[in-house]
Length: 479
Ligand SMILES: Cc1cc2nc3c(=O)[nH]c(=O)nc-3n(C[C@H](O)[C@H](O)[C@H](O)COP(=O)(O)OP(=O)(O)OC[C@H]3O[C@@H](n4cnc5c(N)ncnc54)[C@H](O)[C@@H]3O)c2cc1C
Image (cartoon, rainbow, N blue to C red; front, top):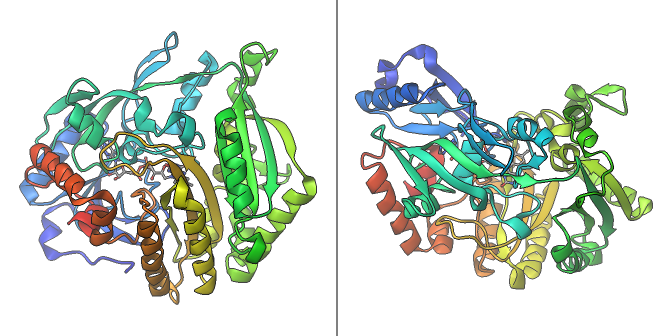
């Protein structure tokens, strides 16, 4: 459903606050009363306002969750993007304290010229640190360094009653491990302390090569895991038979001290910025228009095929690439999601143990093809377990699959997701709320376990007894 109509009861809140807020993928949206505070006192005032009006409060960082994680239909949405202060930075030890609205883009640009890089970054730099902690995001280095939570040293969290508590591995440790990845349901991060990663160059050593099928993709990962700082695969989800799961792999390594003869030059911001044009001519802002005709099954087949054969023809390559160019490939084409059309896209990203992942991914790719719902963009990563309560992490692999949504296929995609869920559960897998649009309560119980959910609910009862903090995702899966 695209539109949620306003309930007349809501009219006590000012109409001028009403905004239509989309899921990042654009496949759904809802009307909310949006507040954008810039201070702690203003956040407290919004919580009070919600109480007075009998409304719930959803939190929103950069709004980059593909589905409904940062939406709160007919209620208040607290958009934290104006809380962007760096509260403390120590370039000697790489510790930084930031407000939750500081984006990954602001963060790396703030620290880079001191010789540091964020330990974990997402595929877009538009995400905010509060939102990244709320979902416990991972990067292309998920295997060696884990999710962002493993690099958060402490945070201040405002509870639903407006009080602020400090959490770390030593203080309120249960809340520390549940609020990271807790989808903003326990409290509002107001200050987050992170440990940055020391680097010795603005460049990474990047190696790329194509792999002919799924088995070869897995073999490459297992062989190169221990000697790669970053490793990620792209797959052509249209390939069949012996070529099923073919694609490219990209691995990257930091340069050790002394290798880059002029690190202060390569770490300059102007050496990192993504170029404003493609091939020096086409403004990036209009590229999505040219992608639009290809966002259908034949067009996406052509692009996936073309990309695979281009990589195969070029053969293995070794280059030095700026950090930003390697990490934020998806930001090269602003608004690329608009190419998917007015009904947008959803992403489905299961996490599967290494022992069962290959068979499960094979079955999933084949099922998508059989249902004539191939995913247009498929990304493959290796993960490790972590100790956060609602974690998606495990010793295994994830496969992120983008599905175009149209009026005609919406219910078929939902049905496909149910079939895929079964494969994931059979394989002992997990799901990721940042990417989710389709998970059902029984599936969440099946993979998280009732005990874990009860534990989370007990913490929520402690931090938010009146259930003030809610989102569409929360009501859909746990409501
Ligand atoms: C192009 C693209 C690439 C991506 N690549 C990756 C990737 O490589 N790895 C990965 O893990 N994810 C990836 N994602 C998903 C994205 O990183 C997550 O959804 C992330 O949570 C988005 O951050 P955000 O600031 O936009 O948060 P939002 O989407 O706005 O919010 C995310 C969650 O955090 C909660 N929240 C927000 N602020 C706070 C706060 N101050 N306190 C408590 N809770 C809060 C919200 O309620 C919500 O539940 C990608 C998304 C896109 C669009």
